[in-house]
Image (tube, rainbow over all chains, first blue to last red; front, top):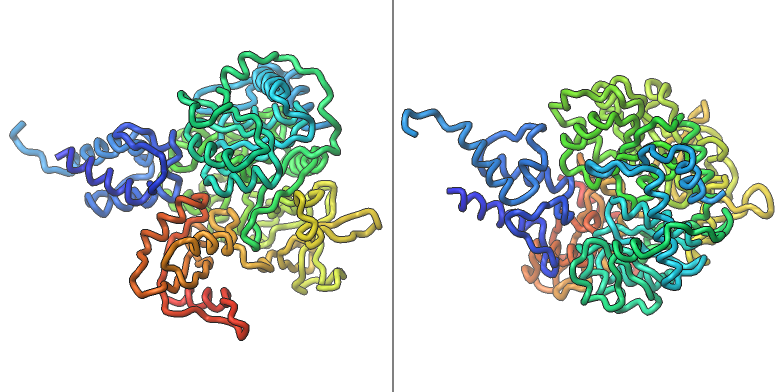
Length: 92
Length: 515
């Protein structure tokens, strides 16, 4: 499941923030801030994408580098949010 | 006194006081001054002489500030350019001012290498954070260059009448113009600003605006002038994190543009730590909607809010005393201390209250001209009160009210202001026309709640459907700075024209704003 999320996020970021001849290699752990990939309006668009795709609300204090500054961090954040909204079951 | 003398003085007075806070690093005045001295020596060793131009392609970082002061210390003229500038435009600027030196970082190496290949005047390139410099023969690593330089550089760099910087600004012709500012120009502006903002050595100014932007750079100058501290941030991408940093570092002054305000006012949550230390907020580059001013005041009740207006050509023009926000929140106030600003008609005669005319600025902060562009200079700098004087025609339409306060009406030209940055429609159109399949193109600004204006391209393709929006935007991203890239592309079968066949951008804009 996490690979689906990582893949979807990578596709979105590549389509919207990279361009041909960019020279920017985007690994799963590349820091967006470090390479100047995304600015404040870009982050708002990314947040809108996550909210629409995964149907949860991103709070202001969740728009932080720990949650959104790399593909892997975004995927992990999405998983955490989805786990929170899943109803608890008896099974492990 | 020149600008770098103020840094040196601050380093002698309070050597251990933080000049910059970058990330978790506190860099003292002594350290910045020493690094600037080393860079000056490194530049001189590489043939940079007084008056030579040094271009700096860097985001907000310690190296950018050191590059600025190091260049001045060597008697050189610096120009900080937007780090998202692409090779074509970078080459243009390098050639335009016949730059001798380029300072950049590894992430921009490809762009830098391509530009330098087409800029024969460049004889020295310094690169920070790069493992492999083989793409740029002759380039040296920043760290090594500074480490092998002497920290002591005592030679006279010049006087305050000398050029300190060239600020490239977009113009309607599609080619940027180099605003020439002397040490004196910048110091008159900085001294005036310090006076009306009441800056002290205990101030901590947040600078999240790009240093390639005059308004961002001004934070550095005013801070160094009084020996204060700048908390230097790269980006407002993560607003909550920036606010937390502001609270942690007890920031006292926050310079913003309406785009930042638009993001802030929509936030439902602010950091718990609170921003009680914030004593002022300034706004410039575009008008702050009164509703946003009111909301900012609610979010930061202890802060005084200053609505200001300026342009690269003179750094700052006017400011509204915060008490006046209750009376006239849409005004940008009166001329900054030791300067004048007044409205004239098409004959250059002052007009009375309520009459719309062009704003003219008089003062020691006014640029000395555009680099090697006498025509553009003659348009903007015209005779003033005394025969030896030149006053600045801002190119903006203003009026005054009965109490003499200034109100911005509109630009005279069709420059788009997006995120507070200028975008020349022609410059973007020129890039779009490079795409095969484009028959005609017009670039206009459309209202945007966060950006102020968004850039929109309206294209008549050679054949219907031969171009896609994503292609156009992608191509623009390759050739333009980020903020210039169209947000929206619309395809039409024709564009409105004048009798002589010129595209009427105004009419395109009208249609663009219709729902």
